[in-house]
Image 1 (tube, one colour):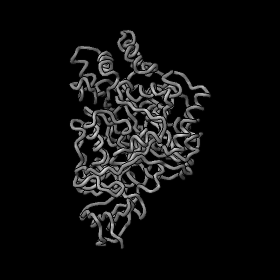
Image 2 (cartoon, one colour; image 1 turned 90 degrees about the vertical axis):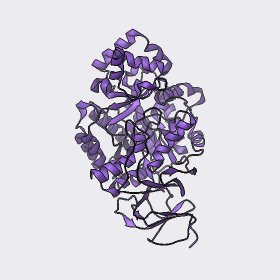
Image 3 (spheres, helix red, strand yellow; image 1 turned 45 degrees about the vertical axis):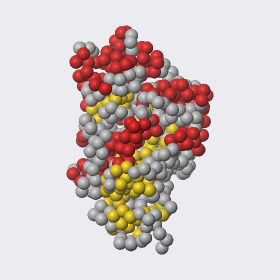
Image 4 (cartoon, one colour; image 1 turned 120 degrees about the horizontal axis):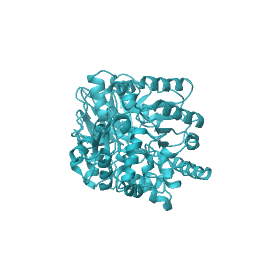
Length: 540
């Protein structure tokens, strides 16, 4: 047999299909996998001894925002290493309706406002998927597949206006989406709690989801409400996908806020019923009880209706602040009112570059220390940071997290918001946390089942035909880990601490993590996802 480029020998292969572990060697030649009998001793240029360890496909994080990494080069490098160190070899980005493409050059301004307000500067916008792929694919260590964000389409065509799109505007959004999907984008995403997506009617989203369905690509949605109105928001998502004939992916499924705790009993049953009725629907989850988003998303959507500069002017007006206070108590139709459902004591500042002393503290604590109302403090902080503030929201119940994670319909995500300060530990810990805490310590999942949720299941959902399995001819993305030691190191106080027990990570046949240390190899790229027929129902 011709010499291999890499041989991983002595390990127990967990191939991603859900089948139990079995002893086997894994060979790599020209970036492709060749499964071999255990103890094959096939000559190889590089050998990894996996004795006593598990060998799995590379993990696929189905919900990240890593296409919008902000900060200086050193900071970016630390953030980019975090998912890699826990075995993530492919990330699905462009979620929650926010992607940096496709942006007509004459409409780049509103889109840059959207990107900067959510993830901070620098905010690069790209005219096409190809332009995005060329820029993002330079010197990457792992792979990206990218969704097209509905909020980006709306910002580019309609702007932040609080109104329904006209038929011509909807057609223009559909044309932009169609071009991006034909070029290799992985699907359509919405973030229906965020401006400008919050302004869209159901019919607008159905029209766009039909375009995704025509390419055999999924409709991926951050529901219009994940709190007290989560069940009606889920009904809307099912309606959209059914009317469009599209596969449905419910992003980071949760029932947040005390009024919604326990509702996963009903929402998961609704998803199962939709599958029984023929809808190809799955969901994903991150293994934590806190979420993370932009601070301005805690405030009524009318505040950002005219864009970020106008919002920053408005928050200085006492009358505007009084209106915000009123709406937090009374609510606004169609708006997920996180603060009204929980309180400022559950909203913790994660990233505020000009006010680093605020990081790690709740808005309630910070306001009380200054003797001001929390709304006034939040508005002052937004103004000081030019709108770029990220928060954590401690709003879920552990029972709901476990219930969603255990569902046969669920795959894993981090929903990583890669920013400095004290980001959510999910960015550096999600996959290791599931394998260590929920598999080994709690026994919620079997190891092979958890690996399936991280590999083959997401590969099929997002149309990555040669990934997600350890099988002959598949792309050589794989992980070598110690099932007895794997654990998350990241905490809310130390959110980028690396995981334990991940020994080796291979991307495209090249070792990118060796002994827990990141190498200089950069084989990653942006993956162009081909059109396909819609998948048949069934998580496996």
